[in-house]
Image (tube, helix red, strand yellow):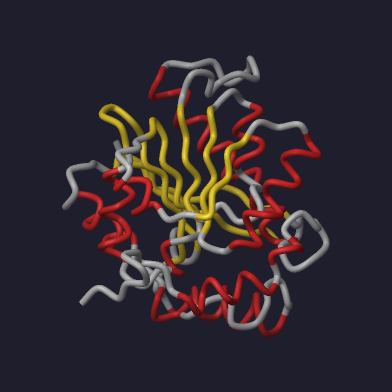
Amino acid sequence: MTTETQGTTIDPAEVARFEKIARTWWDAKGPMKTLHKFNPVRLAYIRDQVADHWNRNTRDGNTLAGLSLVDVGCGGGLLCEPLARLGATVTGIDPAPTNVEVAKLHAAESGVPVTYRQATIEQLVAEGQSFDIVLAMEVVEHVADVDAFVRACTAAVKPGGLLFMATLNRTMKAFALAIVGAEYILGWLPKGTHQWDKFVTPKELSDAIARRGLEVFDEKGVVYNPLSDKWSISRDRDVNYMVVAK
């Protein structure tokens, strides 16, 4: 059964949780510090997959020129701004009003052209909007109904476009590292950020995407190396992973 709020798959408790820390999005040493370290890996993955798909040059600094992109659950705009700098026409949407406020303010101060809206992907689909690139990065594990959310995201992809999703695998390893370790022992994330039963396996996510007519053609894990204090792409999808579909 689909749990909906005003016709969407958003979870009000999740929105409220992120509202509390919304003004810390751009503090690289604050509650979002792990995401700041994680961000370069996500950006490189998106850029490289887009370059391969549309036969673009990754070195000219304008890889996404002429492409429309929506970042679903954009938070404070950590992905939106660098992707706009790569040439994309970027729309960032988030159901949390303070997230949108912070994102708008930072983009204005940085001089980066990004359109931000307090909205859901279901709203944009209902308006008839579609995009060359749809991102739902670290969002799937926070929605009320995964299948309904995936349906809305896939509906927003233009023919020939790409869908990127990143989330957490529902494994005991993910429970140990992403919840017990990251939230309660190391304090990388605020306690309660994640709920293990809302994690999604790669097969579940790929199947949900396939039911909507898109094909997942690449899956990558993302792992943390404590010695180098860096995140990197890996074959290990036991905890964090990303997929791209066409």
